[in-house]
Image (cartoon, rainbow, N blue to C red; front, side, top):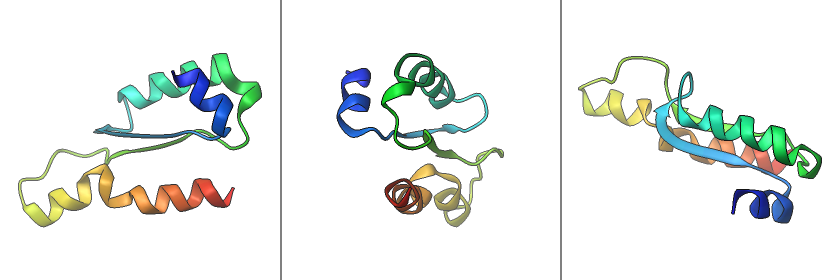
Length: 80
């Protein structure tokens, strides 16, 4: 399914709640780079939570989570 999506779009944006460092998105990105590199029209982008402890304050938590940066990541990928 991943390979078919890469072939169809030529672009990849991985969104996950885990932190960027050590998160599952890095492993998926590595697999895509290894198996689908020739189909990519742009770099693989990852949108994950910040590399910091999870805050308990709701305002800080909203900024910590990946969804707070999703629009920016989508625009960056589409502009490439």
